[in-house]
Amino acid sequence: MTKLGFISPEGEKIIVAAPCGQSLMEIAVDNDIPGIDADCEGGCACATCHILIPDAYKNRLPQMEEDEQYLLDFLDNRQGNSRLSCQIEMTEQLDGMIITVPEQP
Image 1 (cartoon, helix red, strand yellow):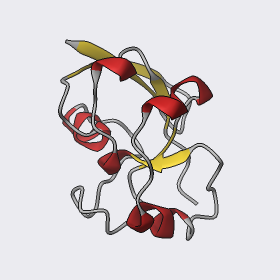
Image 2 (tube, rainbow, N blue to C red; image 1 turned 90 degrees about the horizontal axis):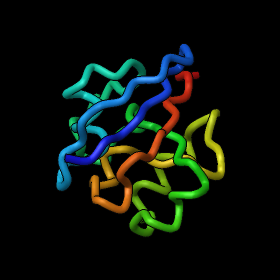
Image 3 (cartoon, rainbow, N blue to C red; image 1 turned 45 degrees about the vertical axis):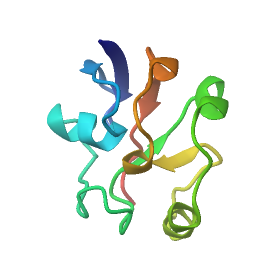
């Protein structure tokens, strides 16, 4: 089983077991990670699962699709490493990654 870390909007670091094949959003919701609301339940129709990816892992992720890009464009707190956790599937290549959950504007 792989591991995934989250830094909550309050700065709390939470490490969880992360099954390969689940989205990062599903893993966050299953572990009650603060700041991941997942209002659309992974349908890429909102941005309530916004996360910040560490630079060292950006090249290990799938390319961002147009729908995700469009939703991120509406965020006031978007950064260069912003992604939607519903669009990223956990893989062994992401084992040990620690992502940041930004404060919601």
